[in-house]
Each structure stands twice: as C-alpha cells, then as structure tokens.
Length: 181
Ligand SMILES: C[S@@+](CC[C@H](N)C(=O)[O-])C[C@H]1O[C@@H](n2cnc3c(N)ncnc32)[C@H](O)[C@@H]1O
Image 1 (tube, rainbow, N blue to C red):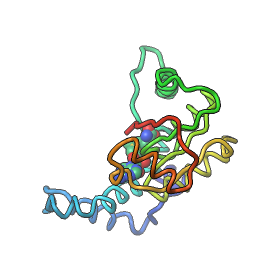
Image 2: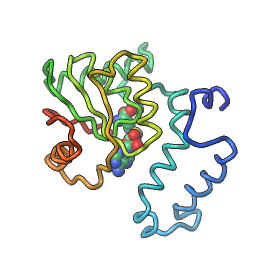
Image 3: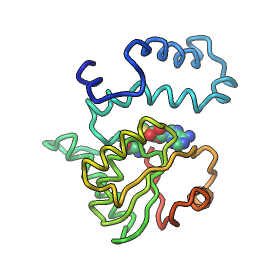
C-alpha cells in the first residue's frame, strides 16, 4: 500500500479507515438502506473511487477496464489492443472530437486520442481522478488534445443530452461519444 500511496490519493492515510466504514454503511450487509444509498449515490461512488484509484493505478495501470487477452499477451498489451479496436470500430477520423463518459484517470482517452488523432474530453464526477488525469495528460504530452470535465452522467439520459450538456459546459460540440464503464 505504501507503493500505491506514493502515487498520491484523495484520502489521507489517517482517514482511510473511516472512509471505508462510511462507504460500507451504504450497503445492506452493513445495515444500509436502498433509498439512502440511491439518494447519496454521488457520495458513495466518489468515496469508492477516492479509496481505490491510487491502488488501481498501481496494480492495473491507467485504464480501469478489462479486455480479452490472448495467450502470451501482457495485461497492458491486451488493454491497449482493446482501446485500438474500439477506436477502429467507432471509425474515428483524425480531427474529430470525442466524449468519453465515465473516463477514470484517462488511460483510454489518451490512448484513443493518440491512436486516432482525435481530441477526447473525459466526463467524470470524481475530482481526484480528474486532477490525476490532467497531470497524466501533461506527462504524456497530450494536454492540448485531451481534457476533462466534471459532470454527473446520471443526469444525462441519452447521448443527445450528454452532448447538449457539453454545450452548456461550453465544451466544443462532440462528434462521438464513448461509454466504457
Ligand atoms: C470503472 S471506472 C472506468 C474508467 C474508464 N472508463 C477506464 O476504462 O479507465 C468508472 C468511472 O465512471 C465514473 N463515474 C461513476 N459514476 C459517475 C457519474 N454519475 N457521473 C460521471 N462519472 C461517473 C467514475 O468516477 C469512474 O471514473
């Protein structure tokens, strides 16, 4: 865990236990009620990602999704291959603007942007992940073509509404929308 915490994280070491307890209390096995959980989903989801993000990054990498993996292929290779596959399936064209809904710390969006020469905006409701994602964009040298916006996709019922929200948030109109949760 010390290695993971070197990556930085939202929650101070001394506060991790109480954050875990608060997160657990949302769940039935710890006495949580469904209505309270639904009413507080933002806090519950953010607590989860504040707790796990550094550890995910340490153990999983910058992309928090699974991918089919060939025999002999490394985890990293399989994840990149899947991201390239998605970009090809979407038929992304150089210069297009893409929205990645629920983007984590931006591993997929950086890879897809570089692979397809597109500009990708990540939509996420977790402040820490956005801060970390911006830093990783800078390190990767893609901060001119990749960025983030903080918003709640639960308030967006369709792709059209997501795209409209982008306009309200003064983001450039998006050509494509990528949901990879
Ligand atoms: C499993 S992670 C996947 C991250 C990313 N797609 C990847 O593959 O690396 C799910 C992401 O969705 C975000 N998320 C969850 N609920 C959200 C909401 N209501 N609005 C916006 N983002 C949300 C989380 O903060 C997290 O970044």
